[in-house]
Every structure is written in structure tokens, then in C-alpha cells.
Amino acid sequence: MVPLNPTDLVHKSADGVYHATCFICIFCGHLLQPGDEYVVHDGFLVCRLDYEAMVQGAFGPAYKLPSSSNHSDHHRKSPKRPRTILTSQQRKAFKASFELSAKPCRKVREALAKETGLSVRVVQVW
Figure: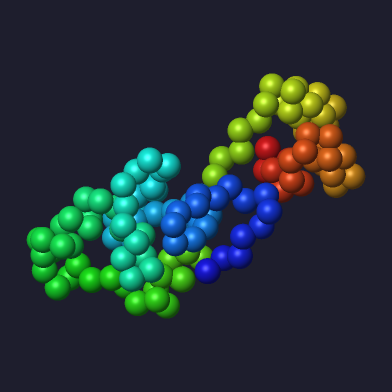
């Protein structure tokens, strides 16, 4: 499992707190959204459709829960990070800074991160 940081986007459920990107069905990989129906089965999140199929035995023995070691590996290999959506004010600050230099130095990137409230990594990737 990946530790939670205070700035991480999370989903809370009755059984715990999950990174938004880890709040997925263990079978189909569907990213569960607030309001989606799901079941926590043996500590794993299962979407309603997959749970119903599992209960009905529609998939036979191949439809088993992964071992807990596979489950934690799965969480470490999350497909993508959540997108950072810039506000218009942040976008203007980025454009102004990058118009001066297409490849600003570390100090400029750090200052821009501080000014916009974003991480240096977000500034660097932008």
C-alpha cells in the first residue's frame, strides 16, 4: 500500500481511506466514483457488476480474488496520476514565466511553484 499524504485526493468508505486513483475495482480496474455501488469483499473493492457476476458464478473458478501480495503490487502500479487542473490565475502565471524563458532555472520554477501553490514537479512538467 502507498502511504497517504495530507495533500492527496482521497475517497473515504466504510472500511477505510483510499487514494482517488486506488479506488478501483480489483477485477475490471474501473475507477470508482463517489456514488458508484461497490462491495468490499475480503478487503478488496469490487464494482457492483463484477460482484454480481462473482456471486452468480458466471466466471467460474477464474473469477477469484487476487492474493494480498498482488493487491498491494497493483496499488503501486497505478496507471496515471490525477490530472492537475490549473486555475486561470495559475495559467497566467505559468504563461508569463515561460514567455520569459522556455526552460526556466530551478530557482524560477521553485518561485513559480510557491506563487501558484503547486508542486515543483507540476511546474517542471508543464
